[in-house]
Amino acid sequence: MGKKSKKNVKSSSTKSSSSNNNPPPQNSLPRSQAPAAPGRKAIIRGLVSRKDLNGLEVTIQNVLDNGRIAVEVVFGRDTIAERREVVAIKRDNLETRWNCIGGIEAGSDMKHWGMTEEECPICMDVVMNVGLNKNAAYLECCGKSICEKCFVQTQFTKQKDVCPLCRADISDGSETAAIQRIRARAERGDANAMYNLGGYYDTGRPSIPKDQAMARVWFERAAEKGESRGAYNLACSYRDGEGGAVDKAQAAKYFRMAGERGHIQGVTCYGLALMSGDGIKRDIVEGKKWLKKGADAGDELAVQQLQMHEMMAAFGGMGMGNGNISCSSSPGMMSFSMG
Image (tube, rainbow, N blue to C red; front, side, top):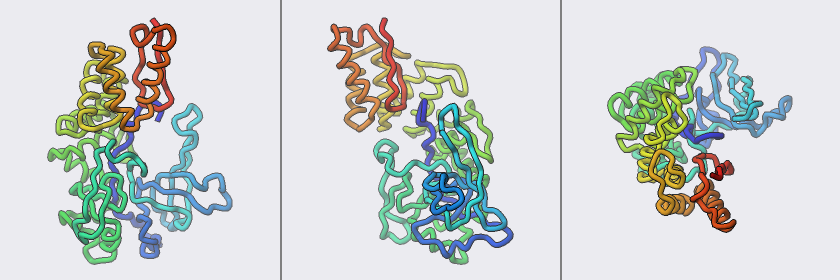
């Protein structure tokens, strides 16, 4: 992402939506694939007429009456040339994933996102990566997860419309219903649901309008409940003036809160704030400690900024005392000004 990674909302495995006429036969899918539900991520494979789409990640919009899947393709994402196209794809040409509705990309660092490994509460046999949805299906009604195998098996029982854990009615597998279930949990004080709801308001969805002021509200509630990602996103909102006025002091406060709770980018951004005195008293020594902590955890931006500091120090002893490093959460985008 160009300015900050606020889009990593925890994924929700919703039940597959159905159409009135000829729904795709879900029981023919390999168990490694998830049902085609709105909001779920998928990869296009094997197209002949549109080979340019093969290998692209898309977002499922709807299951059409003819059994095809309407998906949104984004070309040139986060560039001035970005454009979107909705196309209808045969089910056989889609490789669906379990991490859906803004899911966290596979391969993300678990410590970064505070993910945990848990045993499936149903079969007690499969270890799941909760949050990354590796071997896990997320149930938005109760915020818990079961393994993929158990989730698929429940879809072919008389209890398929009931959550296997909390017994809630999950017969409506639409994105609207999924977000309503998340909202209900958020209003009951669930920190993870608060974070998710804030993410939906931050980016907007077909079923929820973009409202960054409301995103701030939910990110703050999540942060105060101990959710590190909520604290980080709230800091980004204050830093960039999204959903309200710019407040660098509040940004620094919540970057530190996120960093202290294990959010790597929060660690790096707080270090940068200290180095430049951005919303907080300047402290180069302490800033370097935070940047080193971020670099040791694998954050590329922290590594680059430390290297820049060393380079500047080597050129005539200019160092950080004569320059400012600005906070950017995008690796490869470093900026500083000499004063």
